[in-house]
Amino acid sequence: MLGARWRFLLYVLILLETWSLIPSLPEEIIVDILARVGRCYYPKLSLVSKHFRSLVTSHELYARRSLLGCTEHSLYVVLCNRENGNHQVYDLRQKANGTHSLVLFPSLPKMPREGGFVVVGSRIYVFGRFNSVPQNAISIDCRYQTVHPLPSMNVTMSVSVADIIDGKIYVTGYCNNPTKMVMPVFDTETEMWEPKKTTPETMSGYLWARECVVMAGKMYMRDPSYSFVYDPKERKWETDKMLNKECACR
Image (cartoon, rainbow, N blue to C red):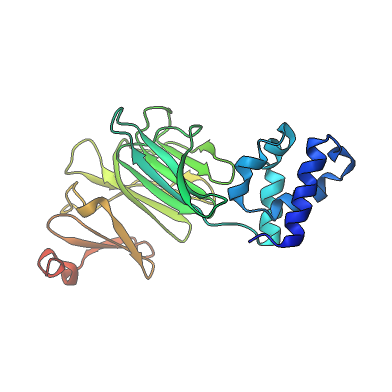
């Protein structure tokens, strides 16, 4: 909640900008005031002037928000448009009156129908077959809604799930046919792919609910017949009898 003092300063700031008197203020003071304002006010502030519109999307503003501890959590969702079949990214954004609405990010590419999504800090890593971009791996910087291409996966595959352990993203899916599973690994620090890793021969291409879970540094996932555990430190797969189909369905 914006305090009375900062609400007053924001009001004065808007008046100065409207009267074209704001150039007399140092830019760092303007950024400092705007950084303390909730993101729900930014759409209206961007209408005040081109100057404000540029500031509310600037790197300097978000750096200042981070320094002041004024960052906010955001929920991003991928929804399918039934009319055209496109999968696009929306932000569940709070309005100034306290209600919420879904806001479309038109600048972001259409998401893959079958893809893996992993959140690391303020970035979302996306893996899969895109129709709108040539790469099969990208990262989205949520602070500025910008897209950064990543090196393409070293194998052609339909991605089912992806998750991260110790800075490395494990992307699991099927290659060429729905019975051959593969798992390439992406290092988020070097932004390079490691040599291709294969999954157990017994694992089919159909993972239950297209999900995996990371617990205690291990990946747990299922196909219709077995439960599997991958230990990245040992670099080996095992079946988990305690998570077999019969027990999981009880």
